[in-house]
Every structure is written in C-alpha cells, then in structure tokens.
Image (cartoon, rainbow, N blue to C red):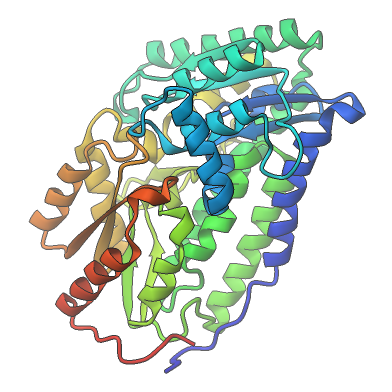
Length: 435
C-alpha cells in the first residue's frame, strides 16, 4: 500500500555508465600510453591523479564487491585463494582480489590488467598485506602511507606533519616508478575534486533525514561507490553535484525511495553483496534502510559544528583558505582524510557508538540492523561494543551473521527469520508487499 509517490532516479543510468567506463578505462589504459595503479578505496587518490588525466586506478574493495555479486566468478576466486594457502577468515575482498590475480582473470573479461604500481594507505589490519602480496605476484613496486596516528579528536601538528611528510614521499615514489613529474596544478585540482566529492556525498546523505527518505540504502550503495572508485576525478565530483541537485528536488516534491515507508532502519558495515535482496525484504514491512555510518562515512566528509550538529565538511576555500602550493595542499589533504568517520573506530569503538547514536536521533531511525560480517575484520572491530552501547541507550538492535564477499557464510532464510522477529518487536507486520 503506497503512501508516497516514487520514481527512479534520473541520474541512475549515468551512474551505471560512469562505473562501467571506469573499469573499461583501467583495462585499456596501456593502449593509450596511460598509467594503471592499484590500491584500496581509502588510498590518497589525488596523488597519482596529479600525474595526468591518463592515470587510472583499480580500487580493491569495490572490485571485490563486484566479484562477490557475480556468484559464479566469486566461487572461482575464493577457491583459487584457498588453493594458494590463504585462510577463509581473512578479508573477503582481499581473497576475491587475490583469487582473480592468481587465476589471471579480470571480472570484466580477459586477463587481469596488471598495474604499474600499488599505492596503499595502512589503516585496516589487512590493507598493507593485501597489496604487499599483490605486488609480489605482479612484480611491481609498492608504497604505503601509515595513517595510524590516533583518532582525529586527538590530532596534533606533529601527527599531521607525519602523514603530510609521507604524502611528499609518495609523490617522489610515483615520479621514480613512472618517469613522470607531478604537475602541481593537476594535483591541487585533484585534491579539490576529492574534497568537493566527499563533502557533496555527505550533503546527499544529510537529505535522507527527510521523511519519506528520498534514497534507500540499496540504491545508495550504487552511488557512494563512485567516490570509492576515483574520488579525485572531475567526473566523480561533477556527478555528485548533479545527484545532490536531483535529491534536493525529490525532497521538495516529496518523492520517496520506499513508497510504503512507515519504519526507518539503519544498517552497519558492508552488506552481503550476493544477497542485497534482504533490503527489498525489509520493504515488505514498510521499512526503509536510510543508510548507515558505513554508507555515510566511508567516503563522506563530515564535521561537528559548535552546536554539536554533524554536517558536511566545509571546503577550505569557502573558509578563505587557498591551496596555491604543494605543501599547503598536501597538509590540508592529509587533515581532510584523517577526519574520515570510519577511521575513528579503529582507535576506540565508543567513538563509532556515539556517531551511530547521533544518526539514530537525527535521521529518525526506529531500529538498527547490524551485520556480524566475518568478511571484514576492520569494520567489524568493536561491533559488539557498538551493539551494547546502542542497546544501553534504549535503541532496538538486531544482529545477523554473514560475510560481505563469501556467500558460503550467509543464510538468507535465517537472516529473514531474524528480520521477521525484529520487525515484530517494532510492531510491524509483513501484511503487504512493497510496490
């Protein structure tokens, strides 16, 4: 029974085309004399982008998630990783990536396109080892930026100097392995694009405070990923401006993502990518998953204002701070990344609990659905402390077990039974099917 009007996003087709073109560009980069590099989505993306418009990344997590969605190829990759001696309790994305690497198969056809170098940020427990092994197999140089300096609330000039100095060293590394010189004009443009893209994404997420929500989380997964792919690109920043304008229009016209919305759910960490229909099952109860700290903060840039409100981070040049030289740009760039919401819980799970409680209050969430994700050690760290903290605050919480990238560890029927029981506690009945 629809309560609100709904319609497909006008920019949906463009988002799919941009994502498809990204993987094509990476595969064909060498045909045009371009450069390929590999890394995780949390790498300092703007550094290689400062070396030319023909420099293309392949970020491991969204690539691994794409493999996970292709259940047949995912099994091949997981089997290959296990045959190579890697344990099933390692990062699922990493095992999918490694499996494809050992098979020498690319998800989108042909042999795996080897990068010229790997450039990684070390925050998650798996990140450095992921690309250390990849570099050994590919026989390409690698560089790692250590950002394990503590929570952003405890940042000091010395800690910021430590990260900034590594960014200077990373530029020297890329110059050495590519034979190119960094173009400071392109570098500053890339940093500005990344800041603009991540702030714009946060602004899009902020609009989901509206009732009915203009976006549902299953849709948001296909939108936030563009920043995980190449957030310092011009096309990414420009697309998010287009998306923001459309979502503002949806809010103004009362367009809902879930036409029968009568309950608002928040999730946590990556979903089981092979079973995204769990979110459509929620809609049969009139439940809309409005997002999560993961969806909002994986690449969204936020700041806490003096009144305690959590808002999209203000762009430096809108505060009168200009980036006219490399050192200033890199220092601001380091600070911008160190404030990532999802980096904070690596140092203290209570920081994540407080952010989750804030989202519950300000996005008008009725209950929290936590994925006990065995596929990601990093984002699942402290997850039981988060559950206890939410429950202590009187917030309804359910948990379900699974794995973002290994379907062998997810039971759809069992998860649906957990949802059924949780919806009953929220006073909801599955008495109609979503339109």
